[in-house]
Image 1 (cartoon, rainbow, N blue to C red):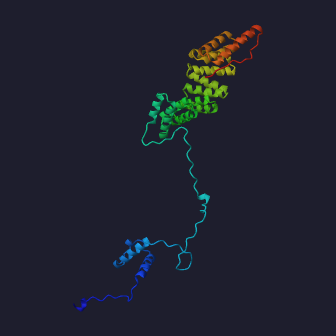
Image 2 (cartoon, rainbow, N blue to C red):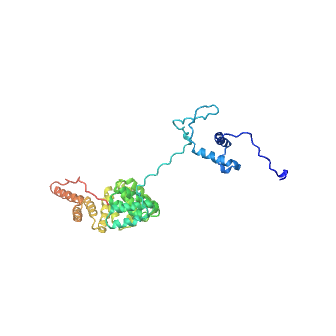
Length: 351
């Protein structure tokens, strides 16, 4: 072998670290160098066994307890956490969202598959189960609050079941969803009148008139709202408009005659009530009101005949029986002492 190709002897440092010292110093040195991921750092092949040994020791070694102190060589203990978190300035806080008000019409439910609750409601209604049908249709409205068929059915079922507030909500929502029609508003106004909420009924009726100015029924229901509120002039005007649009609207004629009687216009009342009695021959309170008009005009025989027709059509009709008894007492008083009993007021009925 030539001198040029002879390998030079390996030079050593002259001392060797004890194994225990090697195990202690190498992990500390690597941590100081910031070698967090050994696979990403190019290291000499001779170091790899040492690195693997250090990683194993770090994983298996127990975590030392913190030592308090500030001198070099000591690990400073973590500061204690405050008892309360620092307050954030209120101007930097966003207001919490308010929960949505609970829907008074829809009924929440859960099911794993889609169910046709509206069809269930129709089936239960046909079977006479009004309560169950109302529950199912309200579940259908939970799935689709804008279903007009479900809303109309919910309103009808709620009225049958006596849940009038639910019916009012259904009519109001239906009226909002179908702004070109007045039918839902008419039903809503009727229900409000039956509850004595005449101011609300007037407001809803006025909206119905704007939507359907050629519909006699909207003027009829609006007149009833004014009549309940004691607004005779407005009531008479609305009933007149209803009769003008539909001259054979017997209920509008009856209510117009009733309003005339309340206003003291007995002759006009007798005229329109006679027409109403011809159009509604089987309605007892129409004949009772006609009897009141005849009695006020001094036509006792006609009044007695009208009262008799009312009691025959409805034997339990209290107002008609009261009027008959009063008219008989007045007749007996007239035989003995004219003028007695004239202070008694006939009982009226409105539709």
